[in-house]
Image (cartoon, rainbow, N blue to C red; front, side, top):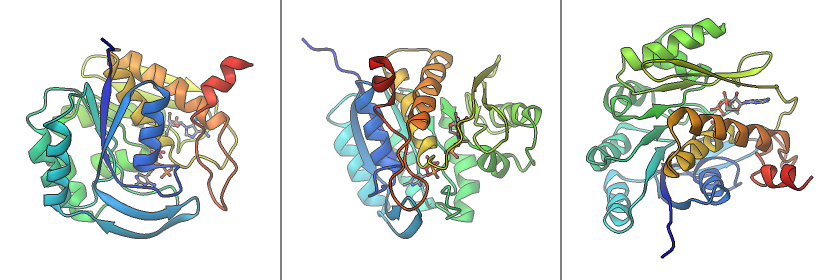
Length: 267
Ligand SMILES: Nc1ncnc2c1ncn2[C@@H]1O[C@H](COP(=O)(O)OP(=O)(O)O)[C@@H](O)[C@H]1O
Ligand SMILES: Cc1ncc(COP(=O)(O)OP(=O)(O)O)c(N)n1
């Protein structure tokens, strides 16, 4: 019998294929994980920004979740764009009984600057969903919004990761340094140790979907049985290669490249 690792993403869409559900499913597929998806919002967006959004109703999100959960087991799941309180409530109701690891990308603002979550929902996300997470993966602006602290140094990033665990109840927090200068350094605090993941910064504007790709890769590696630090290390290698070979397509910030590691192996 074939052994299949499966993962679920609960997120918004990107018809241009760089971020959201589309990035998650490409990542799952590339990492040999059977990918499933529940759509929270349909977003008209591309490499230049967000043009329009239509949110799913809470009941439709619950129905999608029941369809998946009642039928196919999965070893890990992630959430991405959860735009409002109705959506968060629906997700919380259906995931709170799950015993598999939960990776939360606390998506708040697209790289283009377009907001992807309402202001009141930010507080709700912190209070209701963060305590359920195995790991959350904020970038610097998201970590600042969660903690209320300004982050300008690596020490601030580490302090924010600790605060998200100790004050907000996440089991672990990975604060990502994509928005800093110098090396691309991320800090994972798991309630016990601080782990550091570092890569050379790649000089490119094509970073659309990096956060989605990274959290989906972490989810995929966890579904294959890797520990959290191992999963983050492998996912960091995946996203770094995906940025190194990112695609100059579209009129704005191009997407990551999911064939990157294959291309590097072939060389
Ligand atoms: N130019 C870059 N070169 C190398 N790594 C990068 C670059 N930009 C972002 N990263 C890495 O990509 C991952 C996503 O980080 P970040 O850009 O902070 O998240 P988000 O896409 O959610 O804003 C992190 O591992 C970060 O260090
Ligand atoms: C539907 C949807 N979800 C999330 C994002 C944000 O994506 P992210 O990976 O953080 O990358 P950026 O493109 O914002 O850099 C999104 N744009 N759409």
